[in-house]
Length: 89
Image 1: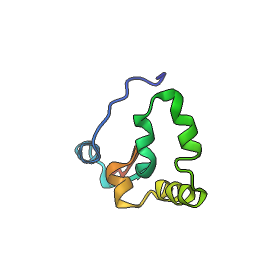
Image 2: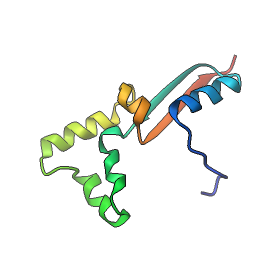
Image 3: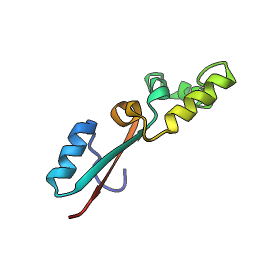
Image 4: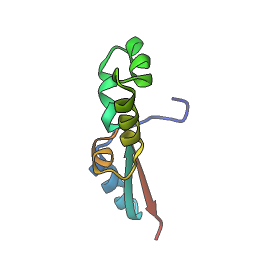
């Protein structure tokens, strides 16, 4: 990682840290809850499952659509990637 250290936080820790730093109206958004199980596989097996997590095209499209919905509660709480947005007072 060329931009310095990266630290993992729970969504609640992220929100608290942002508020403690003075940001207001903090919102969390997330993606990737519904296919995050793929990261449990060995790295060399993951690519195939990202392209096609199930044998059913319709189910894959539904999973990708759910994964991409940043406002879903499951993605905001358990997403593979969480984004925090806040306003400076």
